[in-house]
Length: 286
Length: 269
Image: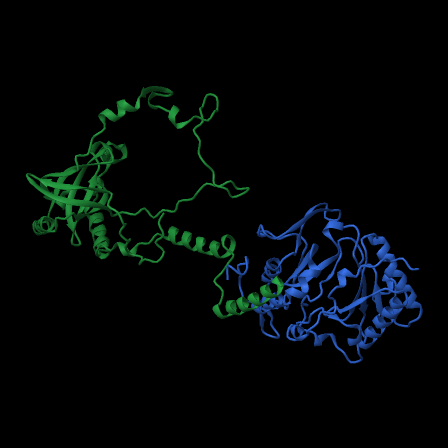
């Protein structure tokens, strides 16, 4: 084992998904197997782990700081946090060992920033968080995502979609390193407002985001240091769903996010987000 | 501290190497022997660490006058005759009067072992024959039969000790003894000079109690509970804070290993 990874596994027997009886060893195995599709996206991005050391039945916790006892080989990014008023040592996941190490810490959910550490102030991802309020139907969520995609297509933007793994969808636009978060946030907000005008259920403002049965185009995620669920991250829900990159054509009536889970993901042959980071675009509209 | 976790709890394992070799001499008879340690100090020893970073600390010799660190080669030995007044000795002077070991344990008298007051016993060693099985066996057997212990002296590590040699569990045992002036005479303590004679009634009662509690000597009834607690504490700490790793289940590790090999292959492409 030692030749294959620097991680010393602990408590492999610990059950993390009690409903499915999945042990930590199964979670680690998942992250090992998904690593080839995941690592490219995570490269040079700050990671925030959502750890569930006692399984998803118990409360988890966010870990922004590199935890105590972090191995020397795990890369970190040190930055002063205005909110915390101190330096925070963030984890950066640039190799397989780090991903396995996080999995061994029961970091079921792996979240990552919209900018990389070499250009921390300028995002390379614009993030549309399509977030429904119950009662909602996932078909409606897909409809809204699709109309957003059509609008983006009209303006020649290439967009990518993934399930959040919970109830929503995430649409992402890779952009060149030129804009600040205020600009990308405003960009998303404008689309939200536009779509809210033509729909009964779409809301574009935070104050309406909790209205029952609405779908909020959450632009407020485009803030420096904020994170989104990483593509292929597991989610802490009873079905062990995965935040799954999809082809747009896969969004068909009747599709359910629970279909994409720890058991089914590896059967998917292609990675719809492959090449996403090579497709960086300008936000200027001609 | 050696690791004696796995041994049975009543005795200690023998150590590997003799600490002394020479011979027992009785008159003109020589019995070559090797001396092995018999007593283990099982107290826990701790290293002193820096509480901030857990690094071991080292001791340095610091001059009390100017607080400067002094090298070993610049040290001398002083005997304090009065507070802060010393007689200084050179190394040669000290070496000249040191007793030299002639590699012999001379036994010049045989006495009853029970006649030795236990307060004089210091430390015990096991004697083992050194190409002298017959002579050793003869000496051991005769000492056992006569119920005697040989009195004599030994020089170990530049110190001379009075010793007794006797038989115990099929071996010759050497126990070093203390000198008279190392043992305090109880009569010198004032409180003990005022003892009164107890009344007959008191004596009768006390005798009954003592007789009721009489038994055989059995040292295995006693355990070092502090040490047991310490061992438990160390074990718990090893599990938690020091070494986080636990021994994982085999088949699970195997599964992860297969997945790892596969992934490493893919990533290597």
